[in-house]
Length: 428
Image 1 (cartoon, one colour):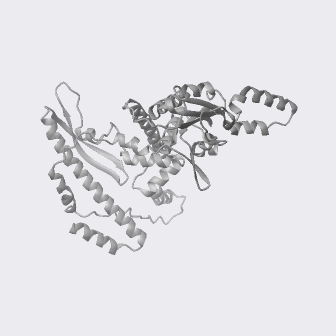
Image 2: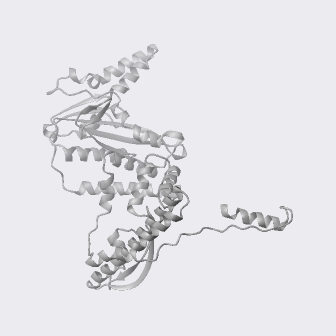
Image 3: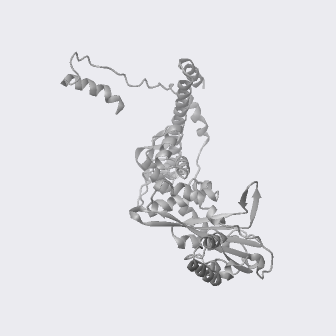
């Protein structure tokens, strides 16, 4: 500890400005953490090797590995072990849940993906590089987003396989659905299919919050509808529940589709979204438009009629106009502005990320990945930091020394061009 304290004091004294001081201290602290983590991982690898030897494994070789973390690059050496008749494994990689060829830590991936849901990939890379000791490109950010989207889907699949939770007895459940069109690659159109389920609305200042709201979204209609049906029948005991559905009447958002989700409920009422009805009324100018409007209202009056005028067993609150469309904003702000276009896979990954964060499931998604199944840490682990404190203090890098060539001739001469090239080399 005395060595580290001495190094901190020396860094503070040798710094000319507060920015220089803070940057040097940050580099020192990160270097200390990376060193400690590297020693800890190698210590853990030795303990894992001892346990695996008891199971008949032998050490084949030792290989190095580097992982990019928020604090920078962490390097360590671990053992590859093999048992006769079985494929070789790295016990430490298995313990840390490091996948083959994985270059980034789970926390770094989580933070990068979070940032990417609110700004473009280039801006995300710039932000992460400024606030950490990493050096990411926008292509790397895209790759992390795609991996995180796959992780969200895997977590949802695991949730479906788990035992059902205790059902919630809600008197009324509201379910809404609508689509959001995006610009796809090669002049194609993509659509985000969204569903939201909630038990009512609560006024908070000038805004309204959904009570126990849950959101489903995907670029695939069947996937969204399947998840909505799973959630409805897993979360609620619908036999004593009134279900109020709302849609614009487009393909896949009519009464019949919602009736499947509400199967087994006490009472189901479907409502045509008021926002779309008002838009049709306001867009009526010519006589032929009036005739079309009359036919539309006649054909859909069963769903256009206000809920408080229908024969229902209980009084329910009306669904506000454009309620589902308001939930589009978090997707449209990220995915529609500035002429952005998406591939099917990339759009699906981004939709899954935004939805997981909106449902406050983001920590659970990465928490599922981070679970460890084996913890053979012994009392020797407590001595790791003591070893780190006794290490030789970090020697700060002095940087590249710049020099010049005295040409004593014109800049266009061969020697002048060489001198100019050497002067520009530090920029490359």
